[in-house]
Length: 192
Image (cartoon, rainbow, N blue to C red):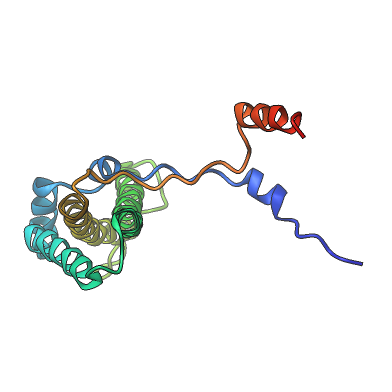
């Protein structure tokens, strides 16, 4: 007796991933002003945004030249579209995680300010409170998201230089056929 995989129901119930875009990453990640303020408030160093951006731009351009004539124009576009997509997805994911943890830190801090609550009080002397740890974690994530945004922007710049086109995320075609395609197949089937 052959067992069938039970993935179809799981796939149907799985929420779709949000579309990847540099604009979304920019909205989710801290900008220069926020990164500078967070670094000053938490005694962190601000990542070298322009240096990271330039390094990733250079990296991808060197990778392209290393291929020499091995890839034709279409293959080059496809390959670098996906490579750049990983950088943008990484920045967007880091920005989303940072935003979530920042919201948690704000929530914990506002609960701490509520005098009517007995829980979430300040930690004993010499220890950090849960709210302080959450704020510190959000600050660390801010620096990471800022650095990953720089890498994504450098990758997108390289894509433009390599292909002459603006980067767009790869979108897989839907597994279900469109009505038009089904209709066309039925019509062609009539010819035998």
